[in-house]
Image (cartoon, rainbow over all chains, first blue to last red; front, side):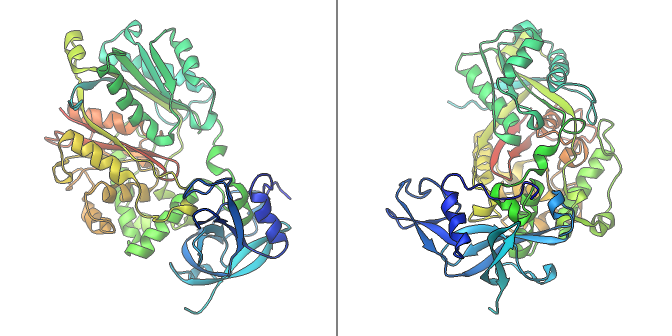
Length: 132
Length: 376
């Protein structure tokens, strides 16, 4: 599949395994309570290695986005123009995703809702705008 | 004790910019250093420190050893500094601190790379697992910041156009510039997006070439009879570090700290700065640096840059040799060279009466930052 796919080694393995089961999860520090993505070995707030997992409720907002008019990879040649966005979950963590809406309709800070989709055989978290 | 003005850039040298098929980055380093030593009037045997920024497109272990071997020199200090496009300015400041600490006498700082005729794949690599969403390359990270700036601060595309138009006007007058055709605002506004909101004219050139400087104390330069030493008045640093995805405030970086530190060391305020050479790998980087350095308030850059304010006859002449957008895509050294020429009074776009120049270098996707202030 053209070399596009997640690296399941290390702490991200549990993130992708949860998505396989239909859940978007982020790390919650058991020591200080901070929430984070991407998955790491330690909490970036207090440096504790005691990290648990929590399922995202699905609410989010659009921080920013870009629209690729030229593919950087052959696997995306027939997808242009496509958007890539930075999304912030209501619990705080941010992630890269795609917004399921026309590129022209996207607005900074617009409210979004999680919608699981698929990319190259992997379940991925995508987002769709919702009425504010 | 301040180190402001204690050290100077004694010489600068560069290769031609553009394509150097078949040349190694080591060879381009040697050519640039040969020219810088000649400009300073220094023999290679007098150099006792060699600091290099490793080539982006062909990263190698112990790269300084290879350059030093090709130069046929032994030095006291030496090493490569991995800070992306911020490295050249930082290395010059490290040379100053080592000179004033008595560890070294004459330092060479150098960079060369061949991404144009060599391998530019590093600029289009997948961003880890996020390749699943089509997230590839360095350029789109800047587009992400630009979109946020436009959305949060209401910055119009014309503001970015002002930066591109100024750089291209200045490059058009520079015989060494890689791109010499001027750009009109109408051309800028009409261009198709590459990765929206970025168009081609917002983006750095990709260039082969090398550049070097010779650094020594002002006292040593006087003893050696260096023809045109340029005092280094200040420097500063600020590292933002977070990837764009995880950066809480996308439109402000640690350039605020870097700029304030450097200006403070030089005894300057933004109002007294007469010329700037800002890292313009993408127009958004230069625009945000203007804000972060305090030339205008956050979100006010569109008003600050309008009506040609960044052009030679404007309020704050910017990138007077064309910068990364027009002269060469080299990551930062050309901006330092142009700062030196402005202080010597030898720029092809000389800012009349300029007594100081502020230079920014930055790397990653606005993750690393370093500032230099030069004077007379």
